[in-house]
Image 1 (spheres, rainbow, N blue to C red):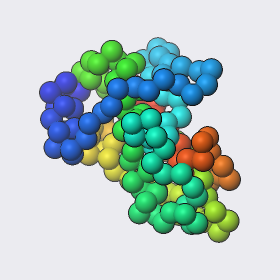
Image 2 (image 1 turned 90 degrees about the vertical axis):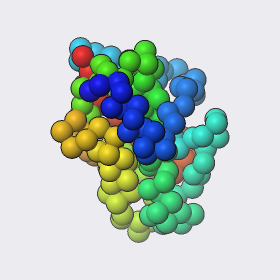
Image 3 (image 1 turned 45 degrees about the horizontal axis):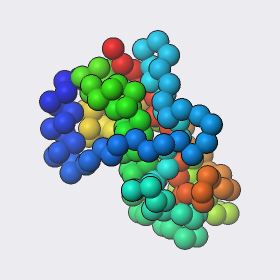
Image 4 (image 1 turned 135 degrees about the vertical axis):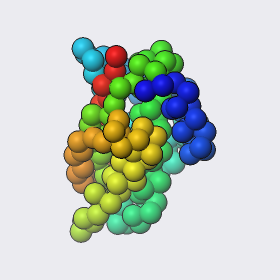
Length: 157
C-alpha cells in the first residue's frame, strides 16, 4: 500500500497513531517472521493510561466496548508502524485480528465488539487489503483490568 494512501486515510478518519509505548513485561511489542508482523496484545490505552477498565456487560455496554476495541487497534497499528520503521508503504495487507473481551457472566456480544476493530481496519486499508481472519473470545480478566486486548497480524514486503 502506498504511504500517502494510508496517511490520507488516517487523516480522514481523524486517527493519530501514537508512538509505541514500552512493553509491560518480558516481551517485544512486535515480531517479524518472514513476511509477517505479529503484534503483542494491545490494550485500550491512551497516554499510558487504560481508558476502558472493567468488563463488558457489567461496567461497559457494547458501544463502549467498540470504542475500546478501536483504541486497542490504533495501538496495534503503533506496533506495526514501529515494526515497519515508520514505512507504511511496506504494509501489504491485514491477515488476522484476535480480540479478547473481558466479559461479565452472560455477556455474549464479543463479536459485535470486535466488529468495530474490523470495520476500522477495513476503512483504513480498504476491502482488498483490510479483509482479515478473526478470532474473538470472552474471558474473565485481562492485564491491568483492561476491557479488551487485541493482537494484529499483517503481511509486509
